[in-house]
Amino acid sequence: MCSLILFGGIVYIIYVALSLQASDLQLATRYTSFGGTHFYRDKWYYLLSFVGFGLLFTITHIGLMVKLYVSEMKPLATAMGWLGLIVLLMMFSYTYHVLSIAYLR
Image (cartoon, rainbow, N blue to C red):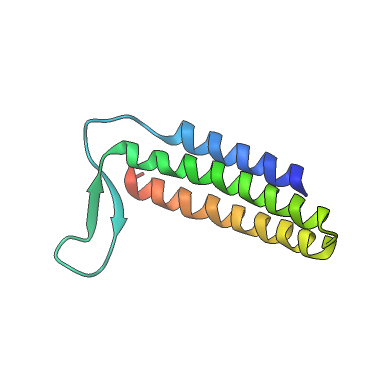
């Protein structure tokens, strides 16, 4: 399970890193239906935080799984692994949609 999360985390980090495009233009990074402006803009390097989040997620989940396994809480470690994989799939989905808004694909 740890190797699946590690592999998924590495694929996520590579996907985000290769999807970023440096530009002088500001990108639409947030959307809200409240207010006069629906799309809020920020610099392109704001999206580098997604790479940091993927790295932090991978390290934290693997660390928690190992800690639970060593503490003889194997069922909880397995549940943490499955939940980690579900969250990783949600991360891919949200990141895809945020990048499609940011670069207006």
